[in-house]
Amino acid sequence: MRVNPVAAFAALVAAFALLRPARAAVALPGSSPAAFDPATGDTQAAPRAADSNPATTVELSPMLTPDALPTAVGMPAAVRAFLYMIRASEHVYPRDVENDAAYSIFYGGARFNDLSDHPVNTGEMRPVKLPDAMCRAVGHSPGCVTTAAGAYQIIRPTWNRVRAALSLPDFSPESQDRAAVLLLEESGAMERLGLDDLEGAIAAAAPVWASLPGSRAQQNPKKLDYAVARYMEGLERVA
Image (tube, rainbow, N blue to C red; front, side):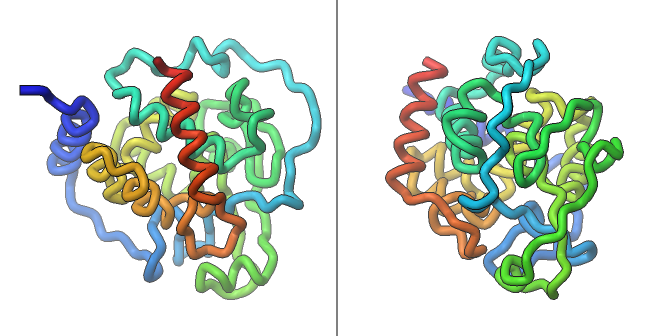
């Protein structure tokens, strides 16, 4: 019998989730704890076209090079390609994606260097106030902020929760990837991916990542054709 590697991986992640203590999660309708934190008004907001990152050249540390990414930790190609698609949607593509600079980019394009923890936890970066329209789009009052950071633009409350759940040692690319996989499992996207339902997986992940097709956060989500093209490109990169 042929075993679907993505489905098997998803089953392992799901089994791990069952071993974790139950936790309460508060979210807006159609949203996700990863995208919005009502207690702090922190929201995951994908950069708009006007928020393009500065055209600067940054010398990457060895930790940020493609060879250092977790290509041999058991993630099936489909999962790694899906993660690549998210990075290509959340950041300026291809400039900050193909060289993996996205792992050290804060919301709006600012760069950070300390990968020992989320950059707001380390104090290197500070929350960014969002336009009132963006705050209203996620159901929050004007004055909300974002602490979205890294390849998957994870806000600090979500990172703190996921880091504790997975005992992640730092904010390195590998840790960011592992955190994103858990968010995929929580959203139901991993299950759809295991069933070879790419569009279903994208739809399930859209409430978590505002840049994905189908997101209702009104933050310039990408078209489905773009996301699929990046996923196929990701498959070629990890082959």
